[in-house]
Length: 510
View 1: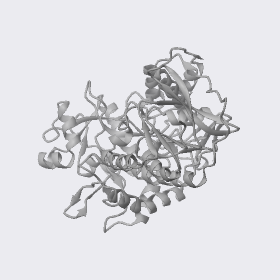
View 2: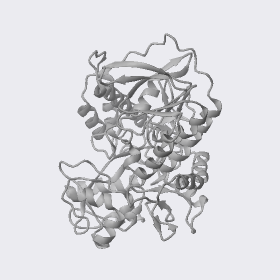
View 3: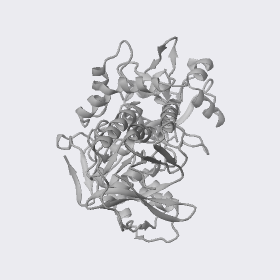
View 4: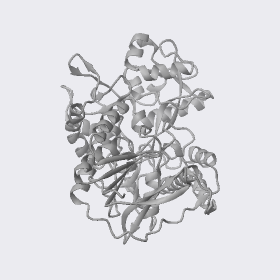
């Protein structure tokens, strides 16, 4: 049976939207993997909100705009920080257990924040706690149902509007159509298009690629944030070592045992993430080393184990005792500032299609996301999208006889494309490298594959997303925020605009 509303993705943004949609009709929430495998689950550091006694919404707004390096949409930032406190209080009312000092909420500091405004849960499992709270709330509503291990491969359109989506049944090796009054993309980020990433396997930019194929506008996709400190141990996943470690005093040291961040920024270890990532790359090159080190051992084992239990246990599993030794770290793709272009209510350029969370681009992050604003974005804008859809979604267009679009697949392998992205579209870019990446992807033959499985559908999305990153990064002839080009090392006033690209138009700046 077709639902009234289809939510693609079961992270914070998708669950929060589904809760808002529940009073207006049936809601189907679809997840590509388990209902608990999303970037939200891996968000350790916390959620930023102006709730402490010495903080103000205006200060959070100023910090967000400063981090965005001239590209934040001010109305989006104002909406985020203004609605944030009430959104957090609602989570608490629903049972979210944030860490406290006595009866008061405990706040910590992270890079580029002027106040200690980061709430955390169970030390370093904030995303997991928020997702747990939202899932428990959503599961209690009878109009919401869930389907896991279901990959959405394409959107269905009729008369220029989105009227549903195509789901791939891995077991039956077949696609089938789901029709709905509205489709919300909450598919998360794109980190897995890069060889080195902190993101889970599901983060292959599916929502962005599907939306682009359907004709929606994509914005600011060239701005990819590389987290400076991912665990760099042979055979271990690139586990994220939260920025909150540096907020609590962790120091970056190079292979010679020297602290180095003072040479790159006055905020040292608490500088914006793009600055820290490039500084680490520069130190690795200068010392001919595969990584640098992050050292929190001076805080003592009791503090580290209590404040960062998940991080401590994970590092210990791979032979690193943070209480007594520094951890080897290396930057890794972490967060997409860009995505499917939306307004503040989640509306895309296509009627019937909405997006929220990391899959969307409201302009709130500008060229560089302020640490711990992502969970807040998912909660605030997921709720806004759900409320708007509930009030405005009309009956779905007549959908009888609509055939899914043909699926064409690239010949390059996933490893080849992810390596290309890392080497040519990574932390430090140049026009020659970006042009090479674009040309390689455009020359990749695309054709049907009757034996395609989930891996092939994900590969198709990875190919599309890397191609879009290369195109938009090549068009942006400047360095700004997370986008750094050696051939255009300075910011240019002409590019203090958002990139926009769609199937029917080239890259434009608006």
